[in-house]
Length: 301
Image (cartoon, rainbow, N blue to C red; front, side, top):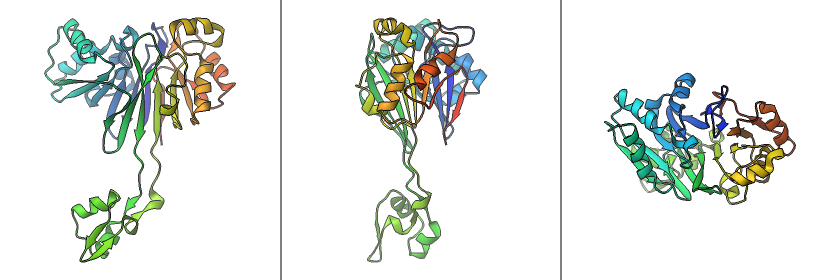
């Protein structure tokens, strides 16, 4: 699993930072979170394949989080994409995507499905799920938590055969935690699963534009990596509150209160050129803090 920060700036791009966007790679699939202008070029520079993106998650419809979607879809079209793409976002996402396609004068050759995000799990795949949670911003806004499913252990194929279980669907049932009966005998999963090779799945939470509050704390609880917007420093706390954004200290307090392991700050105001100031402020409350830079990668293992 890998996280790539395609951009880290808030509101306006700078020479050093593109607008904020995050890509996560999990077992060959790329997931994209927000699509501001310039996103596709950042993807090319970072080696993020837009043809391997099947899901895009939009936090809210302010321009610095959404304006690059039409161009990205047009590029997918030019490269002959012919399989579906699903876009998740706040209420009205279907209409917003339609407007983006209209502005790009684009009729995609592939299906574009739109799903309105609501509080709770919105994606349920075999090996991961994604939960949406509301944030406090000027307009409806969501954060997202990527949750890898726990690995229960390693299936001992040879042991299963020795116990008389025929090769086939019963293997899958045992791997999924179900007992099976063979010739009047019950075989339990623990008899054929090596639990020592199991592990807890990783959790990556992304908090986009928000006034700090406790409404999202339960959703980000115990994250291995918390990615949190920190548009301002405490010296501009009044401006942060006025625009319904967080400071680096706000992000650090959220990480501390929810038992997160690592904090990554992003969505940094263009007025601050030095990321060290954000890190120093956050580390007063949460030591394992770092400010993201464009194209920075984090391997999650």
